[in-house]
Amino acid sequence: MKIFTYDDIVGDGVLHQLITLLKIGGVVQVQTNWDSKWFQCVMITAAGLSRIGPSTVSATNGIQLGGASGSQFAPIYAQLSEKYSMADLYVIIASGDVMSVARAV
Image 1 (cartoon, helix red, strand yellow):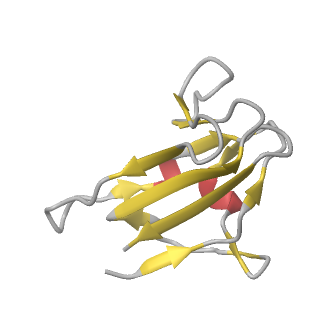
Image 2: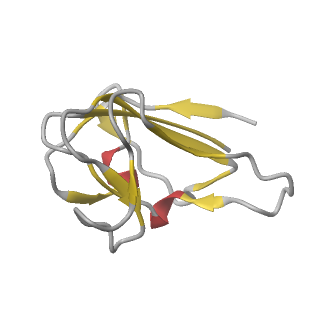
């Protein structure tokens, strides 16, 4: 398994497809396959409300990421054929709040 960590993401309060925010050294990571065995999103600072989920995420829909150190953790799939589709994840990160993301393939 290979683990990828990304630059911290500073929120703007707007809905984004998560993969469009993933950068390493300030460079957006363009990939054709975003399937992952595991991922985790952790709020580094969280004064506002941040959420993660499908494209229908809103201020009242999706999984709330909670306060600082609040996280969304997706356990490792046991079967090799099972993976999370990172391209299907969307986030709203409160303006000025910071989220950290890691994933494994």
